[in-house]
Length: 441
Image (cartoon, rainbow, N blue to C red):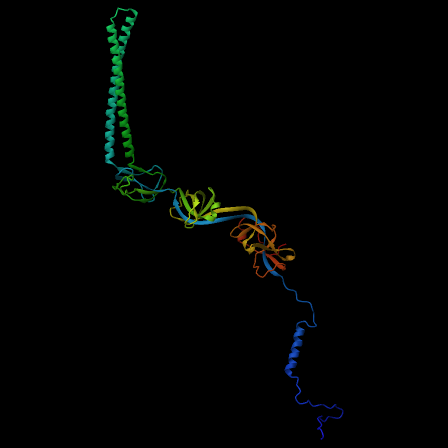
């Protein structure tokens, strides 16, 4: 059997081509394209090209300089202004309102008459007292005259006795002893009558004193018919009108009606509840700034008194601040905010509170060190305010502190620092200006 020739005829001089055997795999266009793509990717990735990588740009961060400044913590509490003193003025004695000299809003001075009451009973009693005093004075005068007469008679009797007794002593037997004894008896009787007259005079004078005291007592009661202001202030309420009967305010069995309500307007008190955690910072005489929003004004004040104990219900301490009202702008019931200074550090090394990193018990700051590299610096903090923190150790004045977003920063990373404005950082102390956006030198 002859095998068929599988070679195709060729032209003269050409090499003969072999036919592909049946079933052999063919190289497709898809495989060729894939190979070309791989070669191109290798070329783009630098296969056989320049091995030097492109230079990355440093991250720009906002920084501020650590500086010294005065730090202080404050506590703001709200309350209502109340008069330092506020009372209802009652009548001491019952009577009818004869004169009413004040009304709502009347400003009075201490001792100024606000109303006059008509009390007929006391007026009559005073007239009786005056008459009784006149009668007692007449009795005293009569007793004085009677004493003078008795003393004169007693002197005569005493001289007669002395004379007879002297003769009887010098010339015995010349004067009968009976005459001497009678003269002595008259002398003693006259002296006793003088003493009795003196007692009558003292009794008359004592009765006169009682009459004078009674009139003084009744006069004091009658003086209460003139109701006066116990202190300088303003009338905030009026309860009575002309002709109204005011009951005496001293009896608990009757519900007496007051004349007016008087409030002291030169001095106000602001009662504020200080939380338990701040009690240790409160001292008598501490300055307080009292802001009254409705007046858009701030008044200086001081801590005047506190209860020195903490209420169990609210865990606060009753504290009072005295506010002077020399301008007369304050009125009772105004809402006010009291700002108390708690603790203060002068010229403390401070950084913005937003620059502090707190992870558990560790406290650090991102400091831009040599070569503009980030250093995670451990620090110890002291006093903290709403915007700043005092650095006790771990930081030097003038070092650049990162205050911008630190979420993507890592220690050792090279950055491009820029001084930024910190509005709250400029509030107090010797904090340096943030600059014009140039890199710190």
